[in-house]
Length: 260
Ligand code: GLP
Image (cartoon, rainbow, N blue to C red; front, side, top):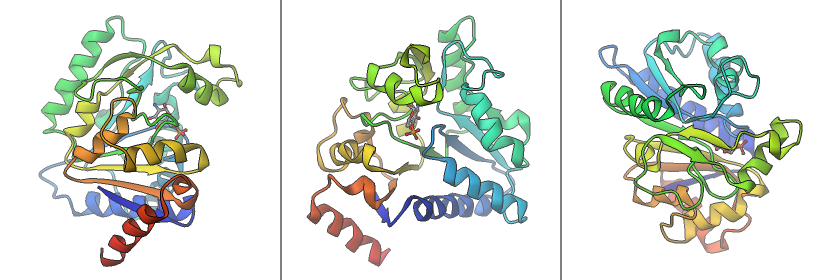
């Protein structure tokens, strides 16, 4: 696993956006680039950069297929807090992606289990995910794979923890009770199957989880620690997020990146 530490969030976002843009640009026409995407505040800097690059004519999404990580149960496309709405507002409405190439779980599906099974099938039909971009919850979760989730899990419906509902209450008038109690989410196994994973982590509120994920062992209580078993994983973060890491850990990863 690479841990790339930048002085601030803007620089971390810029690095991640450029890294992914290069992969998209170098993909050949014959095979579309399959990109997994997150929501939340963490990827906003990357999405802003994608939009800027697109507007400047440097990046096209014509050859990109996307799969979002998760969606709240019961929130339709028109709900301002649905992840589909978020993605349209913050990225898809501003780039040249073909709408038919966007995949987001339907939180209003009458049969969520079938919805989740079909999502896994759709990913497989595209030949798997080339790169999964993600964020991390303050309890170390990836997508909505809350503490205790199976590290072999696939797309399914999950109950959200009180910590996650409190964290995400800021988008629901500050009221945790307004945050849906369940969500549809890709599994840890789904993320692990992608050819590459890039995670953006910023701010002090993520420092405790980053320490667990990077310095402790693989553990289902911090589901992002699964990355320790992934052949090609990168965590890009700001200095603030490293505050709980050992001085030696920070030195080690910075030293390695000098060579990169
Ligand atoms: C939610 C999402 C995750 C996201 C996390 C962190 O739980 N399901 O995909 O990584 O929030 O969100 P933020 O980036 O806003 O801190």
